Length: 436
Image 1 (cartoon, rainbow, N blue to C red):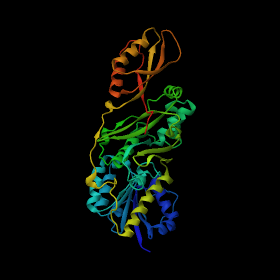
Image 2 (cartoon, rainbow, N blue to C red; image 1 turned 90 degrees about the vertical axis):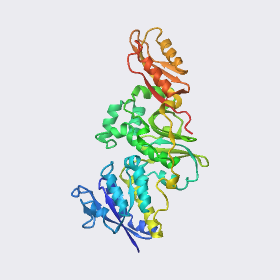
Image 3 (cartoon, helix red, strand yellow; image 1 turned 60 degrees about the horizontal axis):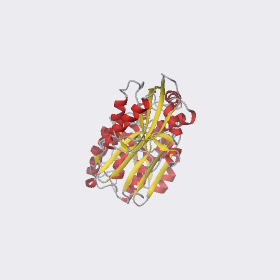
């Protein structure tokens, strides 16, 4: 039986999972591919730590050139993450005529426009199923069974750390800081959780999904990105009172030649399917013109699910090698020359309903001043809650608006925050009642 040799760069948690899966299911993979898939080399700076797996002598090396420049290696798996040296390693592998499998959403979100043409020029594949949703097979579905559809929306919960924190806050009334600390102790959050809790990780994934679904280049830095660090238990409680849950959503929408791409905390109705996605789970929902709404759900991270996605990409490449096909599908599923650059709709022009929370001194006339300022910017009130009365002290006032433009909301709040009776900076959260 033919042998296909692969190399792995990065022997951390996911790399260890890949090696274990390739060993455990070697026979199954050979039966499905029609070739023996052999992990010839693993490059990592740390080759002394015991990862709980026995490898053939000589497999481990701290010299990445033994992976990148070995003519016997057909496929390189990049699992070190980050921008550099990952970018240089991937481009070097491509230049050497090797196919690449990666889970590095940050690299592709920022440098895909350089990597994809390089792969096209060399006639090799770049696959990245594990970059979005871990083991959830969303990318292969976009490129495969759903490829005939014009997508109008793609949205979802794409970060398990944030979803775990918001779930605990919702179910227990806990504060953000306390739940974050627990998430770090359980290994759900990094020691430095900034990329997760500030929405950056989610935005990386959204950039890839928008490109795949709408066939457009995306300027990652232009994606509106907010995290969950400002969400309080009070916001969670008020959302419940109005029949909503708060989730960190990635939202991509296409209308004509314009695209929305935004990441932010969002109130969604409690009876909406995404509202039931709790804990560390992820879910991605698509709407296509023929398939309609489709939702994928599962564990979005972790050793085993992510390793499954990585090895799935390796199997696809191995099958193509056996069939004598070098590049059956471009990375984004569109012919390279068919990928466009659609205009990104400015966040200020986004229209929707909003949750507004004010902290105001409990004195006569304060509600009239707030509603007057909102009316000045064409913002109409749908409903309102004022909890507690304490004459002369600050109390929360919560307002749900009808449809309004974001720039008008921001302008109104900026004016309201100058009022003498407003004791804290006002807050708003976007509401999505219709996510079709």
